Image 1: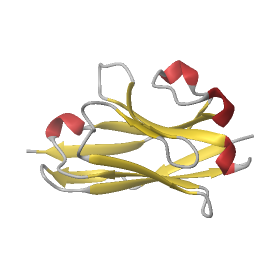
Image 2: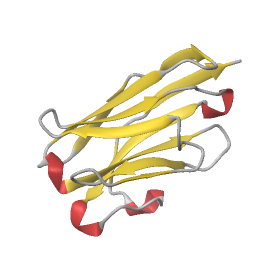
Image 3: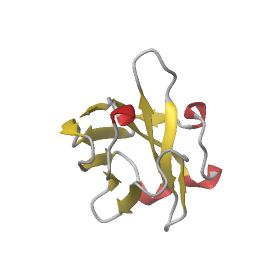
Image 4: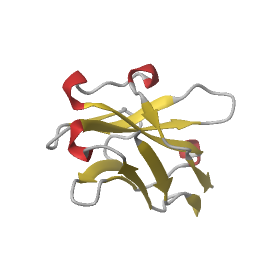
Length: 124
């Protein structure tokens, strides 16, 4: 059983930074593509960023240049560094995983494992 636990969310001002973390337990961490999604109230869950192994990454257009996804296989942890935050980044952010052999994906339905989410609120 794979378990994902996010942390690092909070309330910040526009222009501030946050770093989200997601610790994975239960299986070999480097067997997974890791991704971040977010969901704002009333909207569908949307892709933010994904990272394969060793370092192939993919970003949503809204995240390019501001967000950086990274992973530390020694700590079974994936990170999302978010800089220059905007009010429209306000959402619940979810960590997710899919088997590495399936490759990177941007659809939520492609990911089998999910964390409980962490709230990010950006005020203007």
